[in-house]
Length: 453
Length: 153
Image (tube, rainbow over all chains, first blue to last red; front, side, top):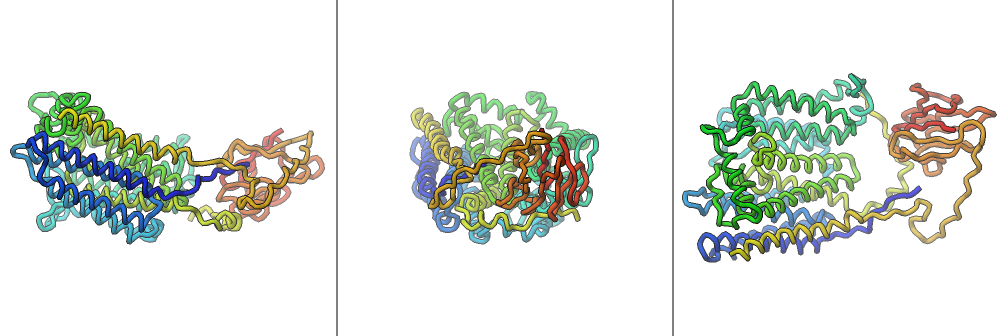
């Protein structure tokens, strides 16, 4: 009989500081590179803007030292680098003749996102507190999803009714709803997973849980899907569905959920294909993006990435602005063109590392809710990156989702900083040295009872 | 320009490899210690107690076929086997659905019997919740919480 012990805990905050300095340096070099390539001179605001960006990142680092000393040391540097690279690319596309003016807005939203993340670290000293508000979170997420359908504040942009406008700002509430519903799923599944996985009957060799255990979650999921269908936002509904199936699988350890999930997914995609004309168009563009007379967005993205080749044209030296939405939905081809395959893969590895750290926090976390929440959040990032990158590289049909941290878009940036704050909070809990009293009391703990009512 | 362009890519990958270097310690950061060792480390470990000899005739051991401890087995000895989460049990289960002292398996003449010791979630033999003095033989399956034990020869 043997036990597995963790190595003695270290806070690793100094490691984080070093990595953070490297991350900020890379962003500043990239910014300087854009200036040198386009104007043949260092950008005049390199010191002020770069300094501001560095201050925001280091302020977050200090808050972590104070409020979550055992939090994961690599998450913040990775996220800072991705956010910074996104800012550089958005700024670079602003500089093209007739380009938008999105970088200052994005910088402002970066600050808002960091403030929200810091606030979350202060307000939620222990992630288990979130469990107290299970159904409030579920309801709030659902209401947020509904808001774009409201007559006055709802806005229809580019064929999807997923925006609300408040005094000049537009906001995509589904991004925040995603987090709230993940919390709701995690909290609810922890309560009911025993009943879900142990009680029930087998249908065609697949164990199915009872309706009363499944009811609330099915209703929540169907409702959110229904709303998304009415808002015609297929990317987000795919994300919600994947999240739902993934978390059920993790919570119950039943492979049948994956089979049921894939079955429902195939049926749903086919239904969507029959029902929505714009989805049919997406599918036909997926098979053949070079059709004459159709949207050439995917084709232009592919051409851009091909022009980049192995090492890219260099920041500021390509023409990513030729693709529509080059700074939001198609920011990945923009990077592919200017940083090349090598740079694009670096970005994908960075996402992989974020997901790995999220899952690691889930494994190490001591309570079921934290495990499920960390897994769900990490999985949502993984799925979102897959849907976006798969869409622009023709692995799957293109659906409109934002690339986490890179795309221009305030609500997405804010939501992703909040996700990172939650992961940092959970990893802090997971890596903290455990209470030495705990192993002694193990045998006198109450035996868990399978709740079947 | 080319220098900056390639330098930026090199820096990006250097950053990734430094992160992987940091994570390496995390991946190999566990060590395995035997449970017999004292946690505080100030008392010498007691010499290993010899297991009483297993009985030759009839079933000889219990194999765990389901649950977190799947794959391990315990010998059936004259002293009987106490099963539960309590560290003083012969078979200590790491199963949240097992009680501290959950069930007992002992010999009566040529027969092996199981007692449920008033556990919270019950002990099941052949799909039925049992009380006391339930006979078991080779191949019987005993479910305790999420753990299934099989009597083997």
